[in-house]
Structures are given as C-alpha cells and as structure tokens.
Image (cartoon, rainbow, N blue to C red; front, side, top):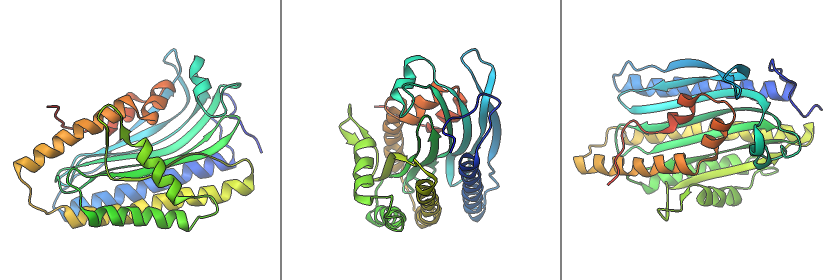
Length: 294
C-alpha cells in the first residue's frame, strides 16, 4: 500500500478517493438537511458554494483545493460546511509538529469541517470535523462538540448519546470514554479557565497501518458523520421557536466571543489550514457573524 502522495498534480489512491467521496457526500446530506430546516421556517436561504485551489508558499496553485459552502438564514444565522482535499509538502519546521512528517514533509489531507452559529440563543452552536491524513503514516481524526449559550440537559444528553452509540457500534477502534475526555481536554480555553461548550468527542492519530485497519476506522468515521446528521437537526427543531430576550441574545454574543478566542488561539485545524496554503475565508468560516467582548 502506497503511503505518500505523489507530487502535484494531485493524485489519489483508493483509500484517499474513498475518504474524499464520503466527505463530499456527507457535505451534501448535511447541507440538504439544513436547507430543509430553513424551508420549514419560511426562509429561502441557500448555501453559497465557493471553490478554491490550494496555493504554495509563492502563491501558485499547487495540490488540490476544496469548496467553501456558507448559508445565512432565519434559523442558521451563519453555517459553514467545508470540504477540502489537498496535498504537497509542509514548510520548514512545521513538518516536525505533524504526525509522521518529521523526516519527510510530504502530506495528503481530506476532510469535512462544519460550524453552525444559530439565530436563536436557545439553539446550540455546533462544530463537527472528520479527516483522513497521510504522511509517512496514515490516520483518521476528528470530533464534534455542542456549544450552547443556554444549555439544556436534554440536548446535551441526546448529543452525547448519539456520539456514544457511534463509538460503541465501532468498539474495535473507538473508545467513547477516552474520546469524551479528550474533547473535554481539547475544547478548553486555558486563559479563561472554562470549556467552550458541553463537549462531545475528539480523537486524532487513529492509525490505519494496513488495509485491514483502514476499513474499521473508515466505518467509524462514517458513523460519526451519520450520528451528527441524526442528532443535531433534532435539537435544532426542538429549540428554534423558543422565545428569547435581549438578555439571552447578549449572553449568546458574549459566549461567541469566547468561541472566537478558542478558534484563533488554540484550534489545531485553524493553524493547519494556514500552514498548508488553505483558503483563508474557508479556514476562518468558523468565526461567528457577531460577537461581543465585555
């Protein structure tokens, strides 16, 4: 099994193509589900899709790209669902910070990244990302976490239950207690001494090593996507019509400020995108449309 990506133009082997196809199909299903919710609310909002090409250190197109899809509607104040498939070589010392790239900086990465900021403060914001990478090693990573300005125990329980089932159904490669604790550690804002939400799961460097290992890890990755697609629209429909006050909105905007701080200071995906010639607007689509700092 080939491990490394061939030089540009970007070529994909069987595993890489299957992962890419899944992330793109999941993007379509999620976007369709979110547009349906907008239609139920009487909105004609749609996703605006913007393709982009990866550029190298000199700003030249080199090694894949992606599509940034953003919708601003009545229920989803701002939601981005991005997919990308890129390859090339890490620049300078950054390679040594990436799993398996210390001796050979070539890489391949494909994945989906989603962040939704909701109009109603009673509807939780959410993040979900899954990805497949190859350096001298191959692995899956990702996670999902719920970020309510006004938490509800029922929503938190349902979200965690969906992700727990995804892990338990793939117990050969997934460890829910470990991944849940990992999310609690990762989605934490040290300078605020606070978590950015009510958690979920997070995992990284789930190494394939062989085709026999790829299949169950790929199945788990798909299960995480399906779990998200099942549970989050249910939570949105449950809370979207809840009346809210100016104080609720102020609480939401202040919370969004904390969310922005995490993504700009600590988020690994933000740094990875900036260091690998990603599209700036796609990388920063996670930032909320409005926020306050007081």
